[in-house]
Image (tube, rainbow, N blue to C red; front, side, top):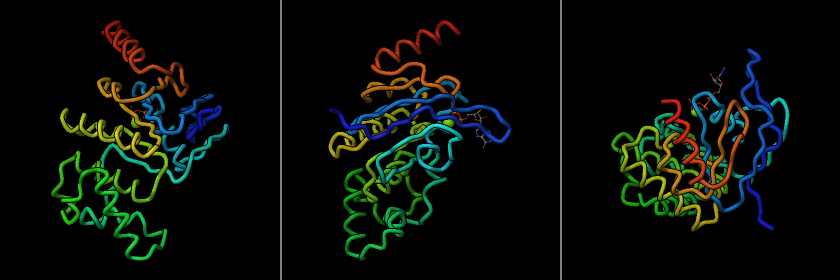
Length: 225
Ligand SMILES: Nc1ncnc2c1ncn2[C@@H]1O[C@H](COP(=O)(O)OP(=O)(O)OP(=O)(O)O)[C@@H](O)[C@H]1O
Ligand SMILES: [Mg+2]
């Protein structure tokens, strides 16, 4: 039987204003797979990721997710807090109170996983957008996260860095048996995932084969245009 890394069951979430955002939202992501989450603006994608990361509490429903969970934001400048690459990756390990030698080893291993070893001492401000996203991902790898939740990590990247990041994340997932849920509006990224969910008004209305979902969304946008 396939192991499941993320299970969401009938999740409900509404803001204090009462506006429902997630409604009977259910889905599963198998361990070791790379799934994407699609949906129009305001359909609840970021809210769902924040619920799964434990940053928001659902009013009803339940979820399980294999810990530790890593979160990657759309804008890395909201995530990276230390002055240099190596210090930022190490910062995520503070809570674990590891001996210095282990911290050093985890940081160098995580930077190697995202091909940034040569930039360990580089100031964060001197990185490109794609490099910053890879530092954020290295932070999760250093913490030995089993699941990565990525909220439009390529939204601010140019086309080349976008496809190189999605390819690298796919490779990391497959090499390390990690699981990822990646939010995107960019349909060309669907070529890299194992499956996708389509969210509409806080509900999963379609899921499965990325090529089929891509086709469905292209047809819909042609019909709207
Ligand atoms: N802090 C907040 N307080 C109140 N309402 C919010 C808050 N954050 C988001 N919302 C509302 O919740 C709904 C879902 O927002 P969410 O950010 O999850 O959508 P999304 O699918 O991620 O959209 P996008 O594609 O634009 O990122 C929207 O109607 C949004 O206006
Ligand atoms: Mg969003």
